[in-house]
Length: 273
Image (cartoon, rainbow, N blue to C red; front, side, top):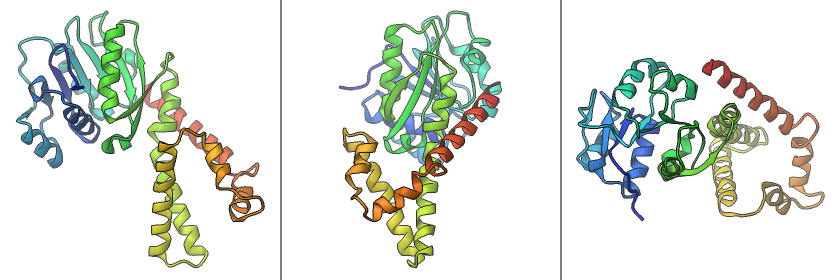
């Protein structure tokens, strides 16, 4: 089924995340004629994508009426320059979706009419390959149909999970928003450990990369819990068992990740304040 909207969509910011969403929407069949892009200088790959669909990115799009949806996908430090454009274009029926990290619903509401529907969302970088996960929170003015529309738009780049308390966005940011970096670090550390065990650097890197990618794909395809998948590859008193005795010790991986996620969540709260 093609992605359909009740009116135009204005995308403000066509960088990495905005571009990933744009590609997802077009791949899902959203008509290029419904899309307007506000960005003075999109990256070259996005500019090529836009040109292939006949979409022109401009610094200040001219609009004859309010769009059905405004998606704000700019860096947090640029938001103060973007708020006036959002306020200028938003109408009473417009759904505003933010994918800007660290900006609360309240920060949008301060610039918009009191009954504006606003969704704050946090996608992660695997959205660029259609394997993202987005945590989202809707304010009280978002209708059921607008929430469903937001779900369709965000799911164009992966899964969507909703929270009913905006404070949980900070925890979601710490787990999924920052999470890809943790996985990449795991691949780095695994490769380095392989070198310490005597493997050539290039082979250790290849083994680590393919192991992390392959395990992630197994997790993606399986309905089993991660703990079950782990147990399935752990023979009693075998090599994996020996390694897990270290990783699952009281001072092992779990407490370290718990501290890391807590630190990321605290930073997310600080950035939003």
